[in-house]
Image 1 (cartoon, rainbow, N blue to C red):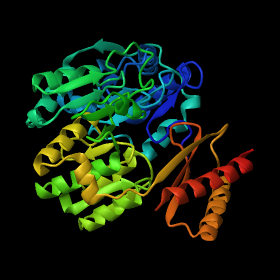
Image 2 (image 1 turned 30 degrees about the vertical axis):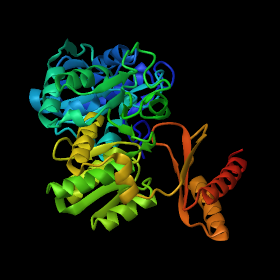
Image 3 (image 1 turned 180 degrees about the vertical axis):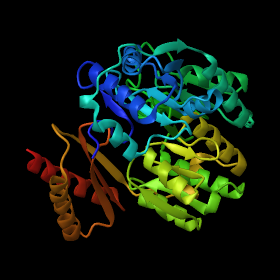
Image 4 (image 1 turned 90 degrees about the horizontal axis):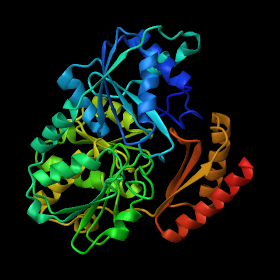
Length: 434
């Protein structure tokens, strides 16, 4: 079991639930276990990022050089690692979490997130570690920005005259680079929430609040929203309806298959994917591999099964021929490619290929993460209910991997059945928790 690493690195509130001592000792343990000599660092726009970078440098000895490439989407890290031959990448970000949070993600030299067993070994002896007397030097560079922009430029072979796009940059790491790319391509676009001040990242905007796109979208536009580190994409179609990762995976799987890039006809998703998505993939005669929640587990399964496409309903999409991790900007480019290829609007594609079962996700705040026995008891409550009510759908109850929350997902064929089951289940879980 991991104590500090969640499904997406280490996160918390700096100087509260995330301490200087923890980050510095994690860094010292990384040097002991991985022994990197040159480390590439990027961050999102949070005001605490410079402080955390300093905490990181304190943990590494002066045998290590830290190259800080500044604010960039997390999908740029594999490109930076490859271009500059760094031994390790560190992303300073709390992704979709509010501005007061921050954290670190450790990236292998091949661009993938660290395996669980490596994270466990890093955690194991940190309490007994002493910090070095002489610390790593931080070298500030801007080269990574140009390399990433060039990469995006090369894969963006789109006729933008077909599209009018509203971008919500979440006041995060996509704010500058998406504007530079779209200006270079003469795209028809508007951009909102691209004025980060260190405190407004994800605030009432971005991929976790797609209603903001719906509120601002104009006739003829489609919307695209990123989260703080821009590794996920949520869209809004021409009718103003939200397009999540399930529909994005559906259209991309069909597109990649038609251009002979869907390796082995395999698509990887998590247990959170809608039942209607599973039916669509089956209708296409593709094989679906399911994983636990977390894009790192999607990436691991894609590598194991040699799959070219995988992702999560939350908008993390991985196209492994391009990057070993999710990148919201790349995902948007490929959705536009697919729309151009099919000559179809997102709403029309969904109407033809994907019926989404009504779904409700409720987040219950916890003082402490539930243990296996407690989760088993709550799942038994849900199972008894599903048998009694003859649920045509499913439920999924799990601890969040990034926050002190219990996530309760309910899915049924009708809205009425879904709401009825969800409300009763939440009432029973709250009674048990309290």
